[in-house]
Every structure is written in C-alpha cells, then in structure tokens.
Image (cartoon, rainbow, N blue to C red; front, side):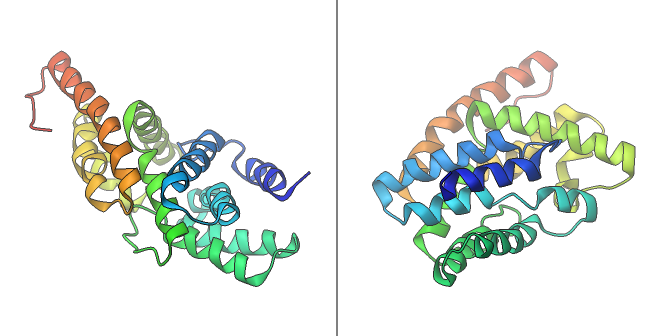
Length: 217
C-alpha cells in the first residue's frame, strides 16, 4: 500500500463516527478539488494530497476537548508522516497547509499548496453539497449542545438561533456568500461562482416556501 492510501486509511480510522460534516466524503472531495485546481494553478501533488487527506484529522478531538482542529490536525499529521519516513521539508509543507486552512481562523496561507487547500476546503461549503453539509452540520451541532452542553464558539452566530431556517439564512450571509472574496486562486473563483448560483436559487425558493421575506442574495 502506498503512502497516499495508507494516509487515507489512517484518516478514515480517526473520522469514523464523525457526527457533523467533516467526514471522509468531505476529505475525498477536498482532495479532488485540490487536484482539479492544481491542473491550472500548479503545486506539488504529494503535498496537496497529504494535506487534503489530513487537514481535518483532529476534528474529533475538537468536538471532545474544544480548541482548534487545524492545530490538532497538523500535530497528528506531523507525527504520522514522521513515522511513515517522510522528510522534514515535506512534513513542514504539509503541516503549514493544514494550519492555515480553516475558514473561521482567517489565516493567510504562505505558499501555493496552502492557498489551494484553503480554496478547496472553502469550495466544499458551496453548491448543492454545501447546502447539504450546512444542514447536516447545524443539526449535528445543535444535538451536540443538547446532549453534552458543549457549543462551538465560532458557530454560535448561526447554529443556535431558535428558528433553524432563520439560522440557515444568516449562515448563508456569514459564510458561503462571503467565500468568493476570500479565495486565493482564479480557478477556485470560477468554480465558486457556478456553485453559488445553485445556493442563491435554493435560498430564494426556501424563503418563498416558508414565508420568510426574500433577501437580496
């Protein structure tokens, strides 16, 4: 088994039972998006694939202990890749990508591979799959608070609003509709615009069907 498949298997073991939207399907989509963006933008494919596969491996620890899963993921990735015999330079490149990927952290990536990973991760919050992930994640986080009392500080603005549809509206304004201006590569911006058309149509239909006043989106 090569390193990529070993890494995929390793991450899958960590994310088994992940209750929100950072499961292996998300990981695999981000990996594919990284490679798609790389076709036009360039970048080291090994660093990109490893960073994509490992970027959320610490999310369960965040659920259990709080903190920042990007930091946890970088630490876990460093230990795993060191044991796999990868060189220090590649490990640092991968972990640098992971540390700066998170949307809510607002960090600026330092190199091309980090910019691509950040873009790919943000693109997976857009389009039809973005709508699905948002609803799944909101439900999971609301249930987490109900059962354990733990809330996610970065999500309080939208997740815990009493009316979940109102919360979804605010989430769209706060995250998906602000993503294009925060993307790093032209390729990602092109993909984002196509996906946002789907989200705007959906939100308009949702608000009509639920009687919420239509907003300019």
